[in-house]
Image (tube, rainbow, N blue to C red; front, top):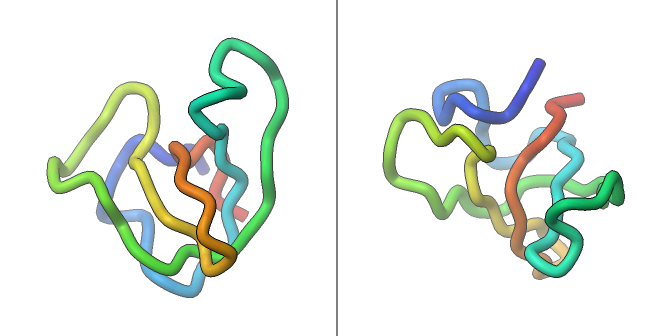
Length: 63
């Protein structure tokens, strides 16, 4: 499942995100969602979230 729809993402789920500095690469960071930062229902590059570890990035994969 991809991370472009806000309705698919809830705090506490496991995801893989792309950090801002890693955009354009295939590098992903696994983690657990703490906060959803994107307010729109869809975003073509992925919904922006904050992980429980504090990193902020766009969801690429919902695990």
